[in-house]
Image (cartoon, rainbow, N blue to C red; front, side, top):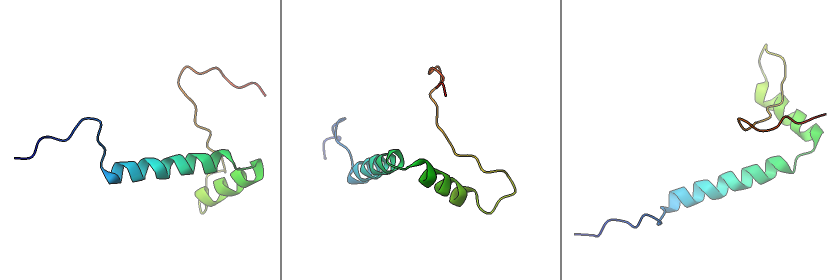
Length: 66
């Protein structure tokens, strides 16, 4: 019988997913305001709802003052 996998070992699929997500987050941070607007347009088209850029927030985080 094989010993059970170690708790700190990760499958290649999990590692690949995490790398992909990390890359996507970096790409999102590097976008300009115009690029974010363009992405929001693509994400909401076609739809009858008004365009809204998605801004994730953390519960309990201080509000950003503009």
